[in-house]
Amino acid sequence: MFMVKLELTRKIDALGRVVIPRELRARLGWDIGDTLSLCCENGTLAVSLLKKQPAPKCAYCKRPEREVRVNGKDICSRCLEKALEKIV
Image (cartoon, rainbow, N blue to C red; front, side, top):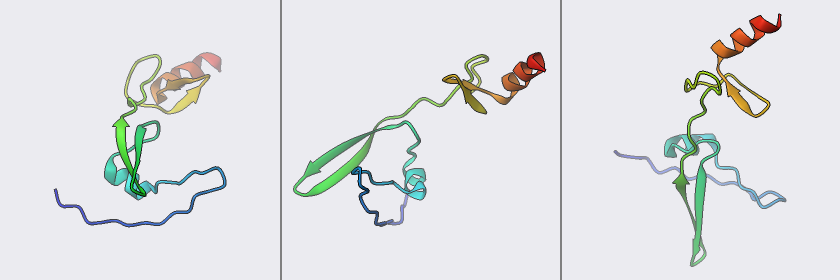
């Protein structure tokens, strides 16, 4: 696959963080929760994907969909509707 070179600049914030822009994360297939490896050699920092975070699944029906997160549990829209019907 042919990839066009993408160069971006970002500043390090007061806590030492650098934001990896959304377009770059999308191009690399990196998502929230993925684990990255950082390697420094001869003044160059290399960042690579170490481990993908599993896709969120509904805590009740196990469908690979998440509508909301309640008390640390991912809940899909269908299960959320069922829960709201029982409350109301």
